[in-house]
Image (cartoon, rainbow, N blue to C red; front, side):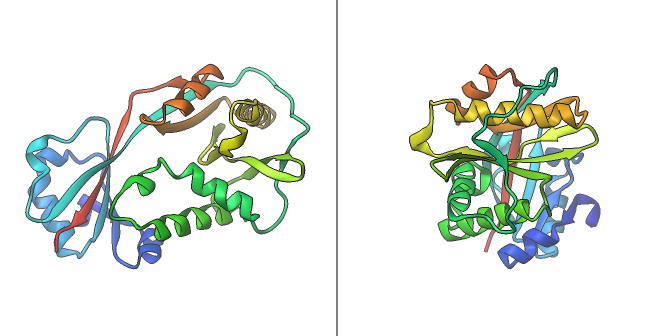
Length: 239
């Protein structure tokens, strides 16, 4: 019964098995058995479920799927009010393929992500995923642009940006560990706000994991306001 879920072609191709996103409008607790049976019958190995509240503990144990809370995401929102200017160390990346530094930064950005913390996803597969992510950001398949911060001709920070319907999204954001605390993050954020302002965006929307306290503090200091958390579950088919 396809009303319960949507098969994700890209994810399925990448992982080599069927992956689906479960309808967010579905109250999983109320229709859980039929939903699980439908997923299982359609040979869905991995399901994503996004919820505004935690799943009832009573359905976590079932015969069909192992359900893991992989992510408690904190959305962050800021209203854009000014042109902040550009740090001279920041530029829009122009090459057709990311550098090794950028690939490592993308993997660093994903280390707290749901794919980084799910024990069922191997380290190699995780690295491949975020390498693919930054490749597809640079070639603009999934991003509008990629900002990079350079020091001594080496890329030490990056941010991917995507503009849609007057909103600026920031899917990937990372600074090399050894350069944290010297203002790289704030410089990238000011550049993001400047590009958003110049493109008539009204809002910046980002997000990070609740456990990433350091990132949350940085975002809040820059004026991004935390919203209600989103609970993200992975459902793995029982063998």
